[in-house]
Image (cartoon, rainbow, N blue to C red; front, side, top):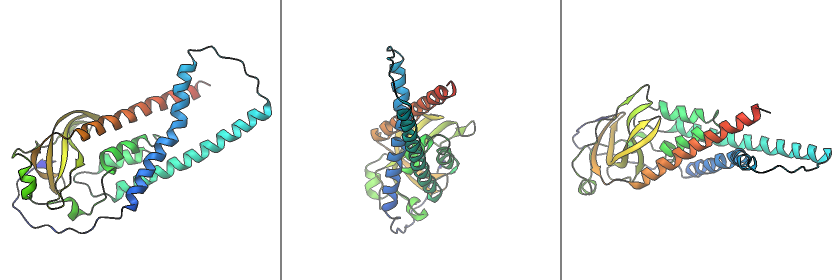
Amino acid sequence: MNSVDLHPIQTVRTPSPGAGWEWAKRIAVVMIIACNLPIWVPVIGGISKDLTPARAVRISKTEVDANKLRSEIIRTAAVALLLASVIVLLIDAFRRTYEGPRGRALGLAIGGIISFGLASLLYYAIWGHRLLRRPHQVFGTHFCARCQSETSDRSAPGTVLIAKGMAGFLLVGESQRCDDCNSVVKTLWAWVVIPLLPFGSYRVIPIAPEEYISRKAPLDLTHVLKAYFFTWVVIGGLVVWALWLSSNASR
């Protein structure tokens, strides 16, 4: 994404897509986390159980069969809910207007299908939590007087990704949207597969795909906390998922 200068031109705004879809996405995120709990809790609990002596418990065949049936029903329902939630976020990814290439966003949303929704959570943290907006609600041309007064005249450096988009610098997050000039606050991150270090926040106006104008803003700590929280939730979930697959494979 490149930083450029542009002369002011008046923009036109119309209402955003309905709020009902935003609630559907929030419910989808809750469902993905809830459906992963039956995997995370037994695996984490199994680690602690390995440290304590096992006690012999006699269970009848009828109870065993009933427990198996109950487990299969719960597992089937969880998979159905998980898949439906992943599809909601996948649809959101395809409906969204992006400020740059949409390959990374679509890749994460599609990856949710094979990662028990964990990649979908990362998509939601970076892009999906934002309102769906039409192109003329995403792109702008100049900063309004209020946004200029709250920022300094220092532009963000051009963002660069290398190694097929796996490393580089990215402007991530979106907060404090201005309805007058379509600007938002984003944070510049050093990125190696996951966000590593923040290098300051900027008020940014996308003027075209991969082009923007920007001004320096105070560091938005909510961006930092959200990025680290969702990143480690996903990493932790993948570790637990790998342990679960490993324990099932060894049986």
